Length: 366
Ligand code: SF4
Picture 1: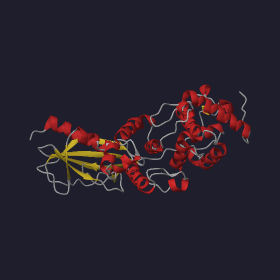
Picture 2: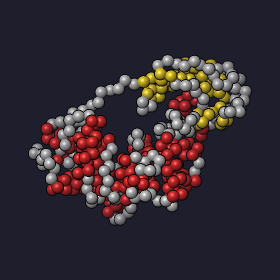
Picture 3: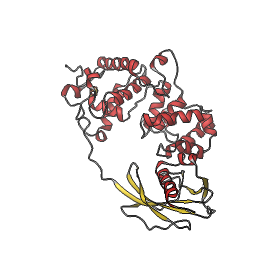
Picture 4: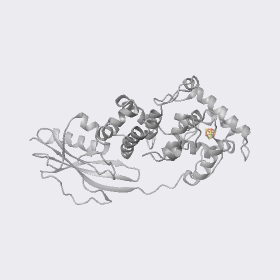
């Protein structure tokens, strides 16, 4: 197979790549709840910037499959940005629960507040203004401009980085290649159908030019791909050295009253699980468990089971302590222990509550 790419990609083959990729996208676009399908886009249907923004915030750090049900829940509850603006932060955090990186949910709420009070519920169509909004960085602003408004901008997510590294046969880690990839994408992004082009690249990365074993035989831009031509598709990008993971340890205290109330606290906004209502826990100490000092008086029993959870920068292991308590102390939040509470609690704490509930059912009598 002869590559049609020369060292300096010409305008002609750039146009060829655009055409090949957009033709492929027209027949192979993923059907996503927040997306306007290419056929509708051609008929003049415009994307809803609210849905584009919401999906892009959810997709930061999270995959499409996990995001889909959350996205649908959000647009059912809050179909328009004004609805989200009127919601309480607690309600937004509860609906977000399980999606992780809770700062995104707080930023979502703060962003809706600014958009509704300052911009009448509309998104500004300038990068400099978008970048001032909470939770919107360079990538998200480019995605909003391009996908929601059809304004050409440089959209570079993880999928696109990988495709471009392969397309140009760039042999290093993505971390080191970032500036070069960004430059290549800026030379390479089209002015016609820029939103569809960005989404086509995302889809190509997710379904064809996958991290492992790219499906080059099915690839619409194979003829332009230097890595394919050189037989390097599987070794690009170069893997980064694995960083040693930090392990933090701590305790979580599940105190339940006879009337099935559970003692909860709101975690500080600036830490992990910030702003989320959770059972109280100790500090999380690197490598060793801290001193176990239950925050509420009770007959605390340590369960055999521990909860393990992976955050971006460290792993967490929590030992679970359970006690029946006479009352919820004044400085704690009293919540009814039911399904709705469990589903609105972050995954790591949800696991601890469920372990304590199961323990109570099988072991303890009041
Ligand atoms: Fe990726 Fe293979 Fe297509 Fe190149 S030919 S862009 S490596 S799928």
